[in-house]
Image 1 (cartoon, rainbow, N blue to C red):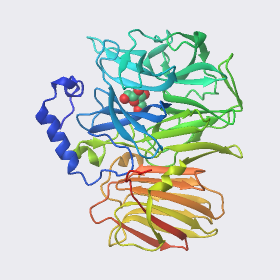
Image 2 (cartoon, rainbow, N blue to C red; image 1 turned 180 degrees about the vertical axis):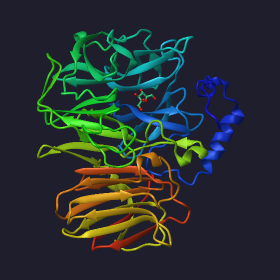
Image 3 (cartoon, rainbow, N blue to C red; image 1 turned 90 degrees about the horizontal axis):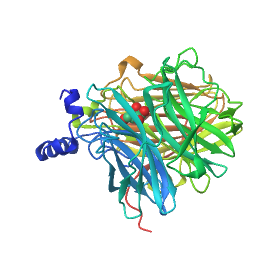
Image 4 (cartoon, helix red, strand yellow; image 1 turned 135 degrees about the vertical axis):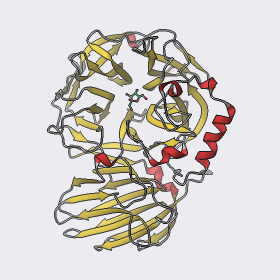
Length: 484
Ligand code: FRU
């Protein structure tokens, strides 16, 4: 299917029943649908949006183009959860159906006000000359699932910004509501702008200033900025598109980075003493991570395991993109850790000692101890010839590397098939989550993370311990509903 602009932006109501039915049938025949990761019902999933807590439940929306694996006319699709592991669609959507969001309900966030959930997002509008107008707009969701859009622009495109100005994140700091928005200045530099809610009114925003976080000024656009607080320290997560490789060496088409500050000075819009710019994830896919401080104070995050401008083998089955597991963010000795929420262990069913396995259903977790001073090599998604996803733990030289060149159908080859990250020369523990075509690997309970996709061939279902002496367990994972 060729995705012309006409097709990408065709109105939702103009897709015929047959076309929608065909899309569903193709998806049903896909060998790569995940089981315990959030995926789009149909089409493309990209950013997590509106991650929040409302009416006693966790809420997240996925951004979606429902008619195929393409970036077209976007909407939000709501999911809710009681444990941050099992997610159920509610039927609520934010559709691109007004003059302020006619060409896409783009990314944003959510916060409870009174008995409503306020959604703050970017309305993407193209005029008759296809010129883009980004509007920061809102909607209110009540407890019965009725969504009412607020019929005015809440934040206008600032004078110094181009039409790339989007992805508002609302947060509280010392009982005051703020929002940051990602953008591009007219001299093509990525930046982040901080706003304050006048009298804490979500529909009345005033500029505080450009966020000062010692921006290296090499990116041309900052997408999806998020500020969370962990033990009072600000952590800024963002996607600096075009970041110079001499500032930070990264492999993916676009990186998802972060900085940890010492404190936050709201008057001067400053993240005080920001630490170095660091990579959130060393794998092949991780973008648009959305994080927020839950009412209990925890910083929770979920990422899009996909990247803009990349084609995936699953595209021909009309689906693209998954979410990561929900990760809790913590700081230990000044370092950021990201690890799935505790309830993830509820998925564990059958347990075995770690050993080679010819056949799994590619839906499992490995919990491993890797000794010091050793080369440990595992092949996941292994076929009979031992070809699959190669995972190498080198605790002698302090390096972990992943190579997916033998793991099924190849894609995004321009960005390489191997990813590495440095570790300390010590024994490590590792948790690896495998889900059909998704992997998430956590070193030392989230000190370093590798996430990504592989699209295995039919016979790539094994686990091979090729080198070294790792010990640990294999757990089959089952997404069955909890009954309590
Ligand atoms: C990031 C992003 C956001 C935007 C959305 C549009 O992946 O480009 O900046 O709001 O996706 O789909």
